[in-house]
Amino acid sequence: MRIVYATTVCFCPRMPLDVYIVKFPSRTSMMNISSPSSFSASDSIRVALSPTVVASISTAPDAQTPIRPRWRLYANVLVALLQPLQYGWSTSQMNLTAFNDKDKCNARPVAAGTCLMFPGHTKAQWTIAVSAWIFGGMIGALVIGRISNRFGRKRVMMVNCVYMILGAVVQASASNIYVFMVGRMIAGIASGGATAVIPGFINEISPPTLRSYLGVKFQMAITIGNLLVAITFFFANTKSGWRFIAEFPIALAVLFLVLAPWIVVESPAWLLVMGKEASADKELARLYGEENVETAKMWLQQDHKTRRDIVSSLPSAMSQPLNSIETCTLRKLFSPMLIRQLMIAVGIAGAQELTGINVVFLYSSTLLKQAGLSDDRIGIVAVNFVNVLPTLFCGLLVKRFGNRNLIMYGLLGMFLSALGLTVALTTNLPAIAIVFIATYVASFGSSLGSLAWVVMADLFPDEARPMGTCICVGCSWLSNFTVALSYPFVAAALGDYSFTPFMFTVTLAFIFVYLFVPDTSKKTIQEIQNEFMARVLSKKNGKSHRHA
Image (cartoon, rainbow, N blue to C red; front, top):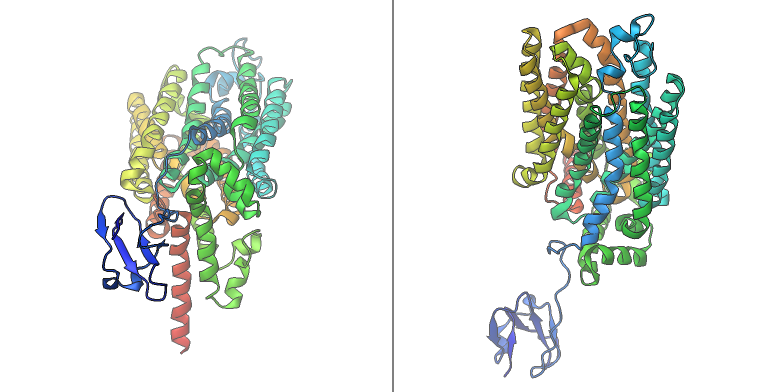
């Protein structure tokens, strides 16, 4: 008779009498195995080679087993966030009345100390200069995101730093506004590349329990960039101050290039998709430790196996687009297995920009002047400070409310804030207008601002994520470009009612999220894909029954 640590000990009638099957889910209970005939073979999952000498075999890795990441995971996220910091910086770097006071820039001659950036520029030139960054972002999102699927995330992020440096150098040394436009576009390519690669990279290296928490840090980096550049307006409000502002991304890029070779890993998910399992194991060990490699691989591999099993049950016409996990072409992305994920992600990307948030960061100096604020720098810093706060707590809020609910709460707050802002502008209450601009920004930051990037990355399986997110982010930049170009003319036409169009788009976004967007928080990629695949199978079975 032997006493072993077990909760289930079973005899297997097909084995020799000296072989027992033992389950070891815990070491907290003890059981006498003197009567093996009382156990059922159906419960057998572990082997002990002798009734007198029991060999303890460790339990197999479980995808749901929580493990503690090493410091390197958080260091990877922190270094990667240097690139979205450039995004936030570039968004707001021109948002100062002293750079673009319409009345003073239109004066002839332009008074000294006014219209500090390219004195005498026209409204159209300024609008194009602002929008050139967005146009570049569109290019970067569509091109760099796709390239990362071929060459890997780490190398593409490092190449993206070259665009950050080049864009900053061209802007800072520009002798006229047209050269500055070119620099803005190059900087936009870097920003677009960051939006296409960084959220997916963070998603791919994070465990399911931390994916949303770490994913929202992307938006936090953007908001910190917005705030930092707003603070510099108090010190760079000079003829050459804008050049120093334009140079700052060089420091971010150089810091990334210095740290990345030692800290940043290649995406294990990408390595597995490319068939480089040994390299993936090495990177997972750096992130989670040698002892947790198999558990971590479960997060990345199990969704591939599940999709193969489900796809094999579909008609050949439907299953063909996903017969290989190594590549994902545009045709496969529009297949029945992925089209719904793509449309939802595109809708989220469009909602993020068409709700008008970048009007605040691109043109809030004009908006605050319209509200009657004498020094727009105070209002800009206040709004950007409020923008940072919700992103600090969004990771905690999403654990309680989930992605979907938090996005809907935020959209409701944006609608009420836009309504309040319109009332404040029409009744000439500048202090109240600033409050509602702040609540508008806070509502966005705690919902679409932080979570859109997370949800877009969550919706796609590993092999489809780079192609899918680059299309979504491209649509996001296109929406941003549309708003940036049109708002100055909308504001001129509608005056104090310039935010009423955004009340309409916020309402549409709320309806869209309510009807179509699933909650992806605390779910593995497999679980998310299973929900979509179940819908496809349900439709297939429904059609089969009708034909029968």
